[in-house]
Length: 210
Image (cartoon, rainbow, N blue to C red; front, side, top):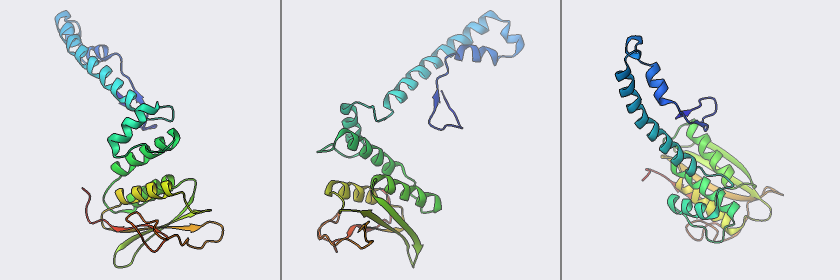
């Protein structure tokens, strides 16, 4: 099975392991029927593993066309549940949860960009402005613009992604603002962990990742 380096998500099924194995033999051994037979027998086992692995991988890929029952199973695997989400919303949620579970943990420019990109997608279609600076501690400040204020379900899911994907050693603050006038919303009790100043969806520091 080959992963095309020009297209990282493209998997190519190799269907001729026996011929490749024989071709890799020295010329002298290629002319020996018994050696050829032995190599082909070993290659048949490799081919079986290739076929089974390819089937597992391709059947596990998530797309917008994935049946709802499979999306619900994936949601349970990555740490969530469907609730009142539509199929499209559940698909996005599962993708974001996978991103949160697999994002790099070490604080560096690459992982900061990856983290911000994850939040941009998680809060879409709202606009997201993100700032990264160091003021005694590394700070990632994220402003989510929406008019009117974000729906509660989206606010909570986005804040959960922000928390679970947070980078080690970074203070993360996520706030929402009115996209029409640029002012922070004042909606008490919308924080992830209970009542906050009203505009803060998430405010936390991650010292480790469990």
